[in-house]
Every structure is written in C-alpha cells, then in structure tokens.
Image 1: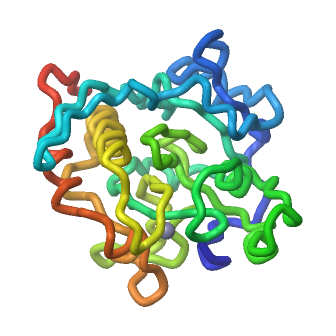
Image 2: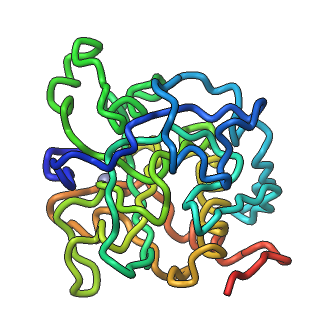
Length: 264
Ligand SMILES: [Zn+2]
C-alpha cells in the first residue's frame, strides 16, 4: 500500500457511514441495499468479529488442494453487496465509468502494520479513520484515500468495504491487456498477508467462495480474468506475493458449485 494507490482525492460520494453489519439483527444485511444506499449508520466496529462469514461458515475439506466449498456466497448484482458478509462500508469509492461492469478481479495482499495480523487497522485505513498514533508505521499511510471491495482475513472471514459494482480505489497506476486505470473495471480483493508468508487454507476457501458468487452476479467476469496486483502494476507492486498459490486458487475457482444460479 503506497500513496500511489490513491484513486481519487476528491470527496467521495454522499455515503459516509461505515458500519458493521450484525447478522443477528439483519439490520444491515447485504442484499437489502439498505446499507449501501442510505449509509445511515456511523462508526465502525472493527474488531467486532462476532457476526460474519467465517467461523464455521466455510467448511472446506482440504486434501491436496481439492476443497469442497460448503459455503456459498451470494452477491446481489444490483446492490453490489454480498449476502451475509460483515460490511464496513468505506467512503473511498465512486462510480465506475458509465456502463462499465466489473471485468477483472485483482488479488492483493495487505497487512497493517506490515507483517502483523489482526486488529482493526485495515478497516480503519479503508474507512479513513486510522489512528496515526497507534503505530509508528501508520504515519506513512494515514490520510490515504484507498479502499478495496473486500478483505479476506487470516481466518477466512470476509469484510466488504465497497459495493462491487462501484469503483474502489485499490489498483493505482495499472494496466491490464493494454487497458490502463484498472480500478475502472476491476474488483479488488485484499488478502490479509505478506508477500513471503504463506496464505491460510481458510483464505483460499473464502476467496474462492466469494469469486464464485461474483462470477454468478457479474457475467462480465470470467474465471481467467483473475490477476495479482503485481501483474497489473509490475515494478511497482509485488502483492499478493510469491507466497500466493495461484494454481491452487485457479483449481478452486474451476470447481464452481453445481446448482449455482446463473444470472442472465
Ligand atoms: Zn495491492
């Protein structure tokens, strides 16, 4: 994460609220569009991991990388929200270019501070309220207006920050197949991790489940339209890093659950 990732410094959309959607009440559930459209609740509850996808939700039986994804994630294309995920909505997004649908998924790696896991810091960075005094490193990134659509934490729990049909500010200067400004047409998914630290089984499983949901929701995506940040910003970015097992992810993505609803 560097300053070059900053997508826009102009004021974001009217949505300013951030919230943690509690499953227990269903008040801010994905799919209802209530959170994204009204953004009525303030304050994040980062670190409140009680109610979201993850613990027990993704029950992959990993044998040689052959995983059975017991969990499906449903993405509502209209609202851009994934049902059942914890949502901490960031103000750091804007509209995609007119008529532009997501065509690419960019996989990132992030840890704050670098190499350390846990804590509310990633949520707070993406929401623009990272406390600079909490760690010496934070002075380098505080004030950045950056975001990703979602984060997969080390234990597989997923947090959504930006509706998938909106433009998050994750890629920075970038190019894919001759097309620049990848934020315009991509979905950015962060994995909590570091370039040389193996990612967790639960992260692959959750990422694949989310990708299946996205593939169902957005026909403009495709299983082979999946890249690392390093691929679209070579020489500038290295994440998700050498530790990321691309063949494993691609195997998982190829095993799309049967009975998946295809939207037309
Ligand atoms: Zn990145």
